[in-house]
Image (tube, rainbow, N blue to C red; front, top):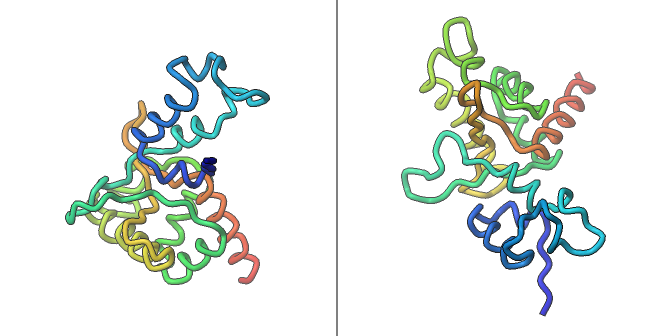
Length: 178
């Protein structure tokens, strides 16, 4: 029997499942040691490391009130265009910040003189609206666009790299039409 897993397949798995598969496939040795990595593949280029690094919890919560797990999804350019098509101009402008691929500090979005008065306003007016539209576009009821990033500067939110690139392409093609 042969099993083929793509990066997208691995991204859908929980971090625990990916870690267990990595242990099963490559053994207990450190991935950095390269001892158990398949021939011709540098251990630093293995997709499981990239996916593990990209996988961060959904924001604002990992689980909906119903108890269903949320999944941070990747978008392609067509899905990004469909997402942008029915969002407010303000939401589209805020999404431009995420198209760079960098995480955006909550402090940059919330507060006096910022786009949103408080965290509740950000969640309701931006994150909630974007995620509702996203679920329509992807036909995935557990899909969310944003992931939480905790760093030395505090909490920030980001989109996955593939989504950032898709947003950048969709936004630039929208600008070309204007």
